View 1 (cartoon, protein in one colour):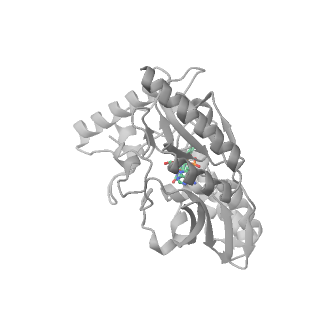
View 2: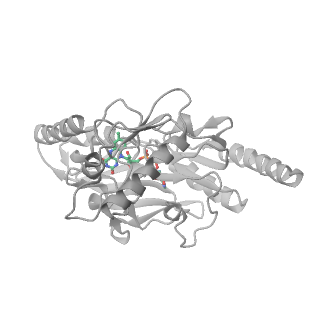
View 3: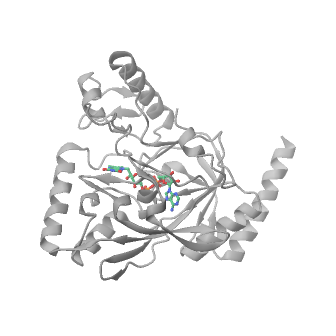
Length: 330
Ligand SMILES: Cc1cc2nc3c(=O)[nH]c(=O)nc-3n(C[C@H](O)[C@H](O)[C@H](O)COP(=O)(O)OP(=O)(O)OC[C@H]3O[C@@H](n4cnc5c(N)ncnc54)[C@H](O)[C@@H]3O)c2cc1C
């Protein structure tokens, strides 16, 4: 115990020194409940918030050199972190906004930039290709990591290059070197995404806006809004079968509650939380119950779309090819 405390104290000193040297804000006392859209989750040892791509690349290099585990977080709109204390560093990227640079049909943006904001910016500039993504909350980095998509658009299909952090530097890699799958990419644990260049297509701003409004309208009609959720909790089963929301709905689970977590009465694949002291364990218990019933009654093994961050499994510090975050999904 004393040895563990002394190790943590040593890590804290190293971390403060690194943050000061790179010139980034390092804070203690934050909780996942403040940083995620489900508004649940326990204390985080340190939150570091770089503001530029160069700072972010430098900081993760220094952390890795010092053997300090870290994990990147955008807007936290696809993460369910458990209630215990998380003894690692969260690299919060939502302040790394930069500026959107448009060069003909190429759009360069930093990972911390808001995806909905970007969709509006490019629509105004008469650039089409991501208007279906306008209603997806979160940052560009989170969207790239998950290959976020909706209404026939996925971010991966328009990604020309991605900027990543390698050995303390900003390095550009072709989008074609990444596998962009359904809510999953081939980016590896330890890969920090700093920004991207998207290739869009000229079109009339009014037509783009009309398509974006249509996608937003369909979303408003079918999904809860203003509720604390992480979007769809589970992936849809492979093509050709019924969507997960319909499966859960047909089992009569809309409105089902476990403590502070409820299956949304609007969309059965959304778990929403309520109350000041909502608990991740309630959301997880409800999610597991859904999985068990779907398995028992339909023979379908639902896969989590939301990422489960366990306090007990610290992030890895190297960039070997174990994809730990995926393995954490039960
Ligand atoms: C109401 C609602 C509706 C939603 N609808 C959709 C939808 O239609 N389609 C869809 O695809 N998603 C949807 N989502 C889920 C979520 O919005 C997307 O997955 C979004 O792209 C996540 O972005 P984020 O910045 O919040 O990522 P976070 O939740 O912060 O992180 C998600 C993952 O990305 C990683 N990550 C984040 N930034 C970086 C980075 N810079 N480098 C490396 N890794 C990084 C994190 O470590 C984590 O593993 C919805 C969520 C909500 C709340």
